Amino acid sequence: MRIAVHSEIAPLELIVTSPPGPEFDFMLPENLEAYRPDAEGRLGPSPDYLLFDDLVLLSAMQSEHAQLVEVVRAVTGQRGHFTWRQLLVETLGEPEVRREVIHRTLELEDRLYPHRAAERDALRGALEDLDAPRLAEALILGRHPADRRPLFRWPAPNALFSRDLMAVVGDAVVMTYAAEPARGREMLLSRMILRHHHAFRGVPHVDIGEDAHGIAGLSIEGGDVQVLDDETVLVGVGIRTTMAAVDKLAPLLFARGVETVLCYEMPRRRAAMHIDTLFTRIDESHCLIYPPLVENPQALGARVHRITAAEGRVDAGAALLPVLAYHGINLHPVYCGGSNPIMQAREQWSDGANAFALAPGVIVCYGRNRHTLRQLNRIGYEVVSSEQFVDNALYYVSQGRKIVVALMGHELVRGRGGPRCLTLPLRRRAIDA
Image (cartoon, rainbow, N blue to C red; front, side, top):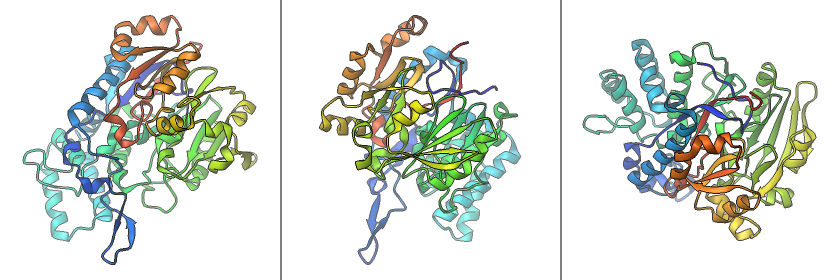
């Protein structure tokens, strides 16, 4: 398989998504608590937190995600679309790989939720008895696929956000490592896919450290990695990706031809989970952005660092867009939420700044963010439904029209993720091709 991503907006050719499944029906209210008091009443991180804001209605979420899949397939064709579960099942087809995956997932589970030796041996035996499709289901569901008895402490629902499972930069794949324990299993499984699936044979890997999960300070997630052009990569640093990880990543990217890594320090808050919750490029000359990052970035604690092989890391100021312009990437801001500060905050929370480009000027956004859609409409974007786009995709893309597909995402957004979070491009066609 040939992979290539040299731009955030070039025409999409190959993509991975991760449709939601029954794992969501096994989430409980206790999985929504980020913090919990201990026996002495001291508040601390909850080991059972699964990162969602609410319990979801699975049937509605599946319907919304299916609309997204139809939209991307209208551009890529069915052969240009993979599902993460499909890749996982195929990876587990080899007995040796299956044994390695079981061993590594049990190691991770024991690190997060220690087991007694007898329990661990029983769990290993139960997993080894499963064939590839049923083992894949058990690893995601956290339960036995036949009788639904618990195998792992919790399911892995965040695999829904396929963007974070890896990141493609140029013709290489960056392996990712979760900041939160809830995402450890799915990212471990993604690394197994990269190392063992036949489709990724020969594809270069960029790895900040063998199984870095659990090493203090080393975490990186795909939502924080944006490829601006052949020479420039933007990486967000905040609550999910650390500066230490970027410092290890940058030299590895330089070795592959990247000249500049721009490191953007973001506000440490849940609303700013990844950089793509604040900023996404939508065409050659525009970006969607959370307005305070343009109007008063210092108040949010934002900071840009320029990293090059020659100079190392250099402070480049607080404002992102002037730094991009210095590197030849001139973007006009389109305000998420429009001009009203209340709507800006509300729609940024519901991923109004998180757009996914199918081609330059052909993007997918959530339809619920009406003020953001109005701003897009004012600069020439025609707002269409997913059904309209699927029926006319080739016409829309070939005509070079500016189109925003308004995807209903009322359940999808409950995990703090927009259309970019839900999509993992593996190949985009060069814009001048």
